[in-house]
Length: 470
Image 1 (tube, rainbow, N blue to C red):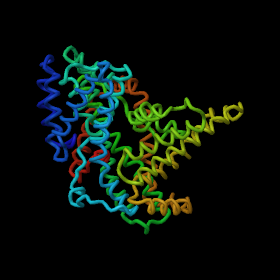
Image 2 (image 1 turned 60 degrees about the vertical axis):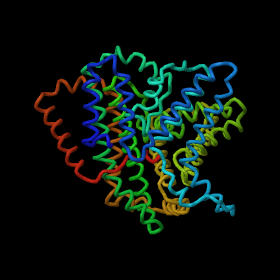
Image 3 (image 1 turned 120 degrees about the horizontal axis):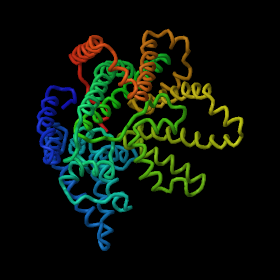
């Protein structure tokens, strides 16, 4: 069910009408709605999801007893093995065959393994819940219904944001008392519409352009390689952040606040800043449960950089069972290592002052945007060979040819929209207050224009959210 499909809108209305009035039944309504939503997707494995949920719930309560603390590792192993089996079996067997190890597994059986929808996201939530309870950061809920709602909330179930128990469960505890105001409903609808615009007006229009260029393979020129990379940069951002905006908007309609996942990432001046702005909930998951788990920065300079690189390699592999994702994660790891080492230069006061200047920040944003744009080549290219070929051509491309390319003005426009979005989200409250002083006929005309645009672009081809495959 697409978030903007007629079926979903019927599903949402069927939930919201009783949800707003039957406060005491909200948790039960959500529990049923989550199961229905997940079961409505043919690639969803509801029985598997429920089994993993029951097992994790039981293990969490067993491990709170001193003599059963060891079952924590069984819970981690079950969730990791479940993810590995469905997501990485074919990848591992293919690589074993390349190394000369013949496997006896039936090819047809392995190739028939489907990736359950949202498995990466709910597995990370199960694992973080297990770890947080073990650390004492989260008190385990005794209600299975509440635990099921926590991990299966349909707005963010398939592609995040990745939530933690101590963020969502306390909100569920107060759900029956929560008053959902008209202002909250308007804000939720506003975020949902922003997401729809990003998805169908921008991302879905860029998707065929991205496909056209990357399908050219070795025939791409240096200029076309840059245009392909630029286009994919804005496609993946608008597609993924659209899902997040819609998820957060839907959560607000239900009286729940999900964590922010994006903060205008292409305005980042460094690799570290980028990962504080891009897929924020995955970044902090990797930091808190992988990087810090490996030792973080507590074991000296060299091991700190190794831990950082290992965490980013795992982040790359999480995105998919392809070496291109691993290389993409490795590149980001190296960029972070280089940036962190460069911070030692700040010991010289003049360097620190230069780095704090507005001009330096603007130049850094411009340069780093192009670095990020280049890294997306490894994310999207079907092979490392093609990514390296594009990289070589991009290094030898002429700036003049890129600037005069027919799609370059579109790229500039998309970047300016990114800046506008940053200003809009930064000054949201003030803009909202000013908007109410705009004459009603003019506001109505804007609403009508947005509605017509949505219906116009909704008639075209529809594409799944790109992060559904992860």
